[in-house]
Length: 123
Image (cartoon, rainbow, N blue to C red; front, side, top):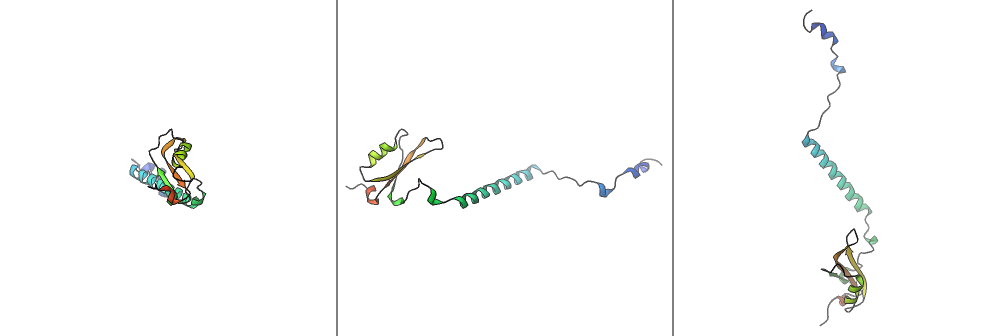
């Protein structure tokens, strides 16, 4: 026997050959990761919607028509200074000074009066 004929008997069977593993391309990997991220975001949104209760927010206003927005406040301004300046117009129920995650003031606040008519300046 000459050539390869002597070695044909040593070849493995086609059924014993392991299946080829598919390697994903860069585009496929990007699409897969994008899809996984979108699924994670939608899951988090669904969980947030399920757990959210508007009545649990203690800082929320009870009546938006009695709430005054005050912007461009100095960062050194305190709640007591705001109360002193705006109590002239009427009885204040609550003042919420908005702060960032570190507790630093953001420069605006919401002042809730006891009545809607107290928010307007009378000539």
